[in-house]
Amino acid sequence: MSFLQIRNLEKAFGNVKVLKGIDLDVEEGGFLVLVGPSGCGKSTLLNSIAGLETITGGSISIGGRVIDGLHPSQRDIAMVFQSYALYPNMTVAGNIGFGMEIRGVPKPERAQAIASVAEMLQIGHLLDRKPSQLSGGQRQRVAIGRALVRKPQVFLFDEPLSNLDAKLRVDMRTEIKRLHQRMGTTIVYVTHDQIEAMTLATKIAVLKDGVLQQSGTPAEIYNNPANLFVADFMGSPA
Ligand code: ADP
Ligand code: MG
Image (tube, rainbow, N blue to C red; front, side, top):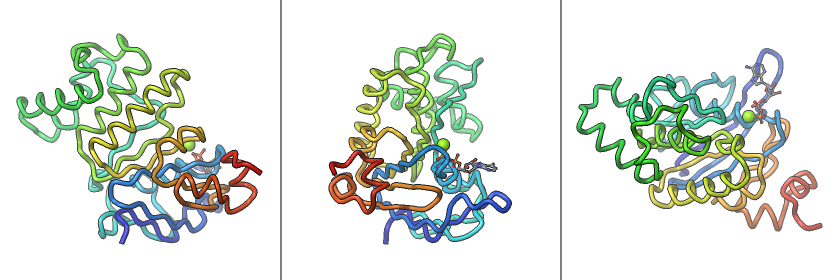
């Protein structure tokens, strides 16, 4: 049985069906990249896994446990968004450690966890700065650090690099790949960048209008696209 299992997932907003019976599996430690045109339901799918949206049909389980109906805080999941809202009045260390602070983790333990994550993300020298004193890429590292420090079972990324310039995007892509290899966390990652998908994924899922078109390894998707849409979207050779 796969680690993250999505079965016949449906989500409607009023009468409008946005996710139409999605089946997806991610193995433990896998890196699933979800791609598809704007408005096809990628964020809705991530939000459904995180519990930020209530699903209207189907089921999601992690490690054999059905998580439908669990409050987001009861799910062992961390999410990094495209617009990474950091607390402007807190330092980098404060931002990364905030979750632990409100859970009552003692200060020395907190400091150690912050230092270890900061070292991994190469922001150890920035811990005393405020977000306004950071570059876009540094801010994004802090946002990732804040999620990382929780050591979640599943990591969700919603187009985390799309606000960064091209050069930084490539650097951060490498960084995320390294982090995944080092930590072995299960990841679901949304992007509309095909190169990002091909380089990061152990598995790619292509979504169109709330319907899963195909899922498979990057090579399978690229070499054997299931239909014209997938071929076109992934830039497969004709
Ligand atoms: P993507 O992330 O792939 O760009 P979204 O998941 O954000 O797509 O949106 C999928 C569809 O659902 C879009 O048509 C969007 O307008 C609609 N949608 C998303 N959130 C809501 C909402 N809260 N209420 C109504 N419609 C929504
Ligand atoms: Mg989106």
